[in-house]
Image (cartoon, rainbow, N blue to C red; front, side):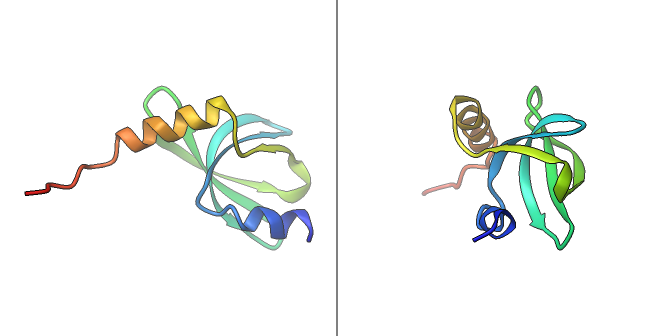
Length: 86
């Protein structure tokens, strides 16, 4: 299994990436034939900031777990609307 196939399994997941142009907290949207598409998360407002498309060869590191990624998940979960249970 190559890296693209493995990464495609995590579509829709939050992660931290390092790439040639910097590093960001992101949500993986798509693994294309020659690029990755991410939604960048502003960690201060917990809102989606922009869409980022990176060529495969420019991605240096992907972190799927860890304390920082768990904090992002917890804060995003707190922003979800609650269901009225009556």
